Length: 575
Image (cartoon, rainbow, N blue to C red):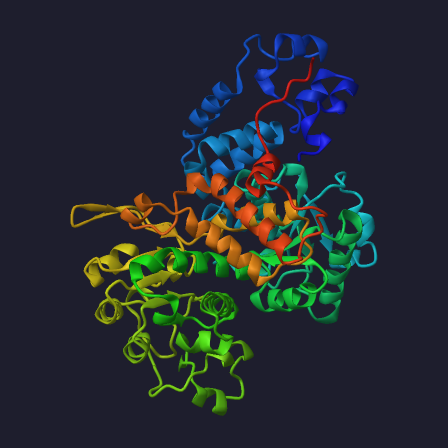
């Protein structure tokens, strides 16, 4: 059930000294929606124009003004200023125009916002903790006025997608994530806190920029770095309770893996760049499976890209196959293959390469041939699903020349259509400069046989007289509802079973109409409803698996999830 804080008239409004202070509070301001009675009782008479607009008219006014701004970065700044003036109107505008505004609030605009964060910074949203604050972290956390925080988005800005190390400017990603936890997942804005950990940056350009707002020093690593993270995580649990969800955002994948391994046993730790992508990839596969034909055990999966992200995707997929078919993990991994810059990951390489990463070893199979290119690997493995998770700008193979830097060439795509009646093509790398191929290229090369899922937005296109609108494999389908589910269940840990439950919930929401337009997910405007189902499924699984601190099982998980979701409608301030 909703807390009293959410359901009752805000007591603070009865203590307003002046109407000006009320109008300057983004949390309580309603602008020209204050009623005649409220204007009298709250000393607002004369401080506002005489007209009274209801919230729907305000939304129309805002969106009309916003559409006059041609630059998405400026639109982002304009929306940010709206948030500062009127929090509830901001979320109502976003909710009512979700598909139009999501690309402005998240990828790809948020990456450019982070690049220009020093110039765009206006006022703090969240907390900044630097390496110089070691020993004082808990005191800093106490400066945050809200005690009932449910989720914290933590970033050190080391690996902002497509831009690399942005240091403290990675805070833009943390703020963006907290916004989506509310706009898409329904967590109350007060329940989510962005925090930036500033340990410096190795970005020379930023260090020389007079407008850079972070520490002007090289990035600190080693024990000092991990000791600071320790102090932050345990300070968060002390301040907000042991079940606060700690979301690691835009850390390097290597650091994130270490942090997840360390805190998964005693904290509620989550990383969208690893676990969220893995769950969304699994949701894509589950949704596409009926079109592919056969069972999961009949499919052959080839991952092009063998970093931590690809490994997480493969590990969750293998766990799901094992669970669904009642087989061991080694058996489930037999039809999952990896290819990296040196070719297919094979047992021969595992035996002869001292530097082959540990996460690749479970997928080092006995294979005849080295798979020295994607084309060669496809010919050897004959996959039914080809999944691209490249993370770098350089050509995938040393010495190779790729047309337009496309990893999935026409030859590769035609070969996929040769070996599978309905091949699944997942070009998940981001940003678009790293895209393995476009949806239209995949359709044309496979003769329309493929099921395509992209890591970036694909514009609808015509193919043989039919409009194709493929899905974007975005974690926005997963993390908002996942965070809500962890909160309502008072989850004690994050486990693969919860990620699988989230993936299944998303796949279950896909309709026949979605499939008909070439998608494996519903439209993004439906994400808030999807998030309620994800939250219900995750919370239910957490309770069933002993990962919940709730004393009793609720009668209806979905109803509970929806009752928690933030309603941006204005509240009356007078009886």
